[in-house]
Image (cartoon, rainbow, N blue to C red; front, side, top):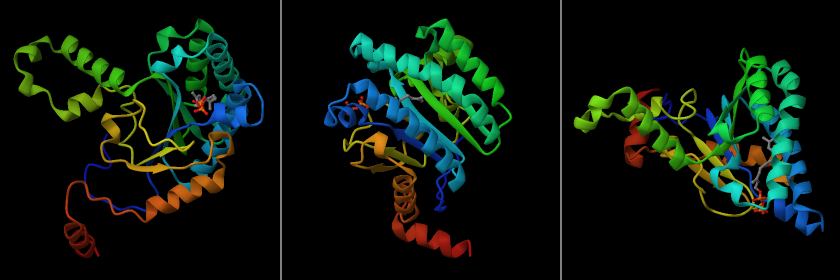
Length: 253
Ligand code: FPP
């Protein structure tokens, strides 16, 4: 855990996380039901996953369904669930053939048994993928993740309640929902909003934030490339000064 806890300025982000926003607006602008936007959004998931793997991204994490999305109209929630179930079945072979490992993070007990089985099957089928890890966050929230980590630390180590100074950052990191991924280097939000919306909080502490006004169904590989190019030009400081970073770079030559 934690590729980014020291200053490094590598050109390709190791871990990219995306808030896929704008499906509803994409559909409404075309006088289509919002669900059609999600359907087109699911197609974008495939294109961006393949493009990210080709670009050398090691971990791609997508915010598919937040803890708060249950508040949407029941038919939209139902449609998102069936899209997810269909995508798991349809994409498993494709992911495996492309060497992409699928992981799902979030509070999965609220999903139907069919979806939970689909997740397990897809994770097992793709477990040997070495090109990229695709994490789909489903019924996920950053606060839920930190709270669950604290709860599991305390249930494993009840003694800690009396010695809170024993809790370390790495202990929390290890108990988070996707402890298999390094810290987020680049967080992208499509659809023009500039919020984190309770997505990854802990592991995105030093992430570079890139927002695009392009709606998710229109976010193609060339838009991803723009974000990667922007990232390549960023100077990541991790609390240090620009001069310190320059000195580090000269020292490593
Ligand atoms: C936000 O758009 C998007 C979502 C809440 C769901 C994202 C789901 C998908 C892309 C499809 C299924 C995913 C997988 C992994 C197969 P919005 O509806 O909030 O858009 P709006 O802001 O324009 O209303």
